Image (cartoon, rainbow, N blue to C red):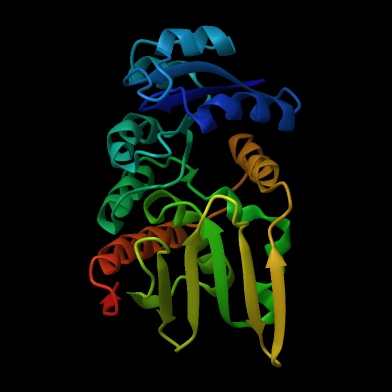
Amino acid sequence: MKTVGFIDYYLDEFHANHYPGWLKEVSRGELEVKYAYGKIDSPLGGMTTDQWCEKYGIWRVGSIEELVEKSDCINVLSPDDPQMHEELCELPLKSGKRVYVDKTFAETKASAQRIFAVAEDHGAPCFSASALRFASELRGLSEEGITGLVSVGPGPLDNYSIHQIEPIIALMGPDIKQVCFTGTEAMPALTLEYSDGRRAHFSHHGWDCPFAMTVDLKGEKTRRIEIQSDYFRLFMEDMVRFFLGGEPPVSHQDTIAVIAVREAAIKASQDPGRWVRL
């Protein structure tokens, strides 16, 4: 059995609450979250780090250094506070151990490049991803030749755009040259233009809106897709393979492109109708 250490800004959040059970179940006991570090107590439900660790049967460590030393592999969480990732990732990546960094990987392209530079300098295998990337409905689509797509999904632009941008890049590639905000404050929407002229469009709606796509393929074929698969489990299967010695399932290049698009999208939202180059 390999031990996993959790590093989080605060631990009482959806991913930290569910990943321990999912990792143990999907790995059939080959992985177990044993250690956890939270920089602050949760501002959400008021649960302290000590209370969280007691609830989930995980040992609280006093520092990131201690957690890195004791753990075989490391999960850096802080999913809603990507501004913390450079600080929280530094020691894990410098250790050379396997590290998964939760979405959203970074706030800016420059920050993403700095984090990966530390990993590469110290030989630390690592990756980051939106779980939506692993939805079974998306498998094989890119091989059919995508000429364009329209994507919809729930949630706000700042921390949910990752779940639409990443599948777009997984399907159409990372070579996006500019973005334009075409929506409203109530319905954020953006158009992404590729260097070869192809375009993708995504928009954000209420929480009852499913993740879905209309995909245009070569030969004037169109496919309508609604994500219904258990993409979190599929994502966990890839995380388990990675922690047990497999290759990172997402390239650093793709993740940097995702963050560059998100950064440009937020900038474009402040000046609707104007193209923002990446």
